[in-house]
Image (tube, rainbow, N blue to C red):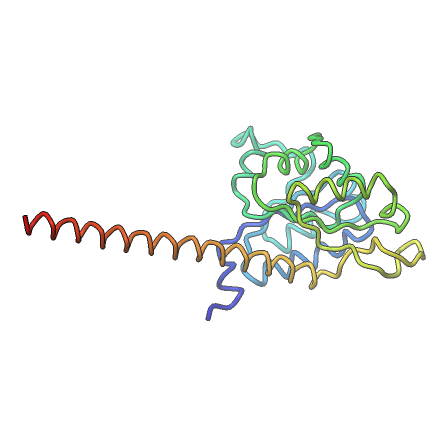
Length: 219
């Protein structure tokens, strides 16, 4: 059987990094994805750069890192091109602000516009203080996004940077990576089922075609 590394050879993933204290963990997520043959493009929000530098991700991916205001002359519709390129979008960490933007369809930087143009699976890994996570506004956004088919990886219960203990802590990189692996397996299984159904239909069509030909030849 294929290893997950082989299965993921052609899986293209956008890693969105927003401005949370857990942004440093995004470097480890990038390393795990690259190690397992994912094709990774990183998009950073403006505030993400307060916590980790683009150079870190450039080094890990050996490629360009897209910032909140990146413009390319050869790709004037960059957010559309990125959305078409990717198979999965993972935003880790996901701040309360980013959840709100996504829930209300705001598109004021490269990451939000790319997400709005993206029509496949988006995975969010929330990271915030326990009171921010429990806030009714955040919980309403959470429920809204889930209803739209957005997948959540976390958050977890645990100690937080501010010293509080509660829900809102971002899952560990290895656990987020495992969630992405499981999503890929489901996508591949679904594709395999579709392929099998198509093969069965082709065989049935060929059988009917052969039967009709026999009837014609007999007459």
